[in-house]
Length: 629
Ligand SMILES: [Fe+2]
Image (cartoon, rainbow, N blue to C red):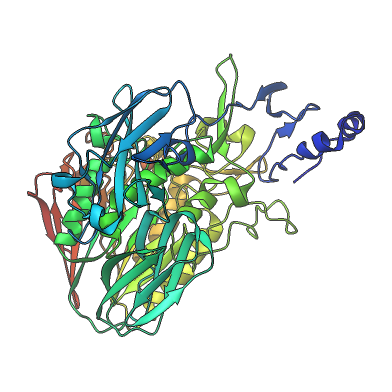
């Protein structure tokens, strides 16, 4: 935090203390350039002597508002969206926990209007008798799922509310998000969920109850389990329970056959309905998760652009994450969903002017409002990655933290004889690429120095680990874009000039040189890396990264490297975002299987053998098949 300049402090001395205390500003990270506050405390960027001010607006929507703050009355549940101008519709129905392995709301035969920001779910008279499929009349409790729709018919949020009584109805502790299986190992797991109110909850596994502290966000660590064993777990919250199960991973290196799944890019698609649930393609995500579970996937890796994002407000991006998690939750209660960051996870500060300037940078303060920190708050991922870019040669100060954190957005995990390394090529990301020389910021597709060092060390560790046979690297942006992002990712139409800026200075290595340094690590310094799993381009395609493949522009003056062996780039950004077609590149001859159909990639691991199978989650047809090893 930083206080205002001296003239303003003198000015503020004349004001009340209370007002003066509100004027503490978030200090501008030293990694940015030309950005400061004016005497009135307004943030601006100085472009060639001209002040371009930050866009200041209020969040239009938040989970808190759109959930309608449910309250009970004598005959049902009232929803108040806190906005008199909000008109729309609520679809609702009981969630019959226990009736299906993957509980979803079963919608009732009528809906409730939202008039002047208020809606009402009538339970007592209409959802009773032949519509009471959860026995709420007898048990005097139940759970309702409700879908909030605006007057244009856009789906905004799927809420959950648990009630008690048969009139009057009382709102009781409700799991509004989760439970999710996280950080699964051969001996333990972390189960996470969010409740509508602060409660202390517990999870029961194998006859042992694990309690937590009073909170809305719950992360309960279970330890001391046996490998390759199926466990039922019971979540206790208030007077209710939910039951699911998980299977611990095999003892490392036991080389048991298993399958894992890969996809990315599920931000809202066109077509209406569940394809656009305020930020997420709910429809494809549900089908994709169901198909992964149906194929007994041990886990799924999902690398970037989960949501539409590019938001200025944390409240709005959190609603998008909530919708994505809601789509996958009925499946994520059984197996881990590992996520990586993409460009659409961007949470920014924006500056614009009438002359057409538009500058957008990773939001600060970094520790609470950067894209990276909000991503970490929303998921439970391994914490074994690098710390940040602090300490790199371009770190503007060794005394302060000047970069966002890599915590939970760069990491690796293992499952039996497989390791998956998750990278972040949208770190410190400033979406206004052509303005980087003014503002500074990270470049789409670029892996900065400390992250690359960590990758090199991690690969060396995994190469030396006799339990690991296969390493998959996953990163949102393709090394070799083929359709949709040939003008950026790690190619920029063959222009190596593109690179991040820190504190007004460009980094030493251009994007193509950095791509080559990464290839040198994962191809030449590794025998175990088998494939790079990418997204960003909304299609499925496989690229054979062979030593013979042409991978430089015609005029290229930086150092060229040789590759010692072949690996594959498996691109699967086909989880619901709008499609891109195939484009011409120097490596087009090495690309095959390209399709704009929705796709789920399955890797079947059997000791030393790795087979890839690609299925369409919508039609269930086979898309591609390849023997990788
Ligand atoms: Fe992307």
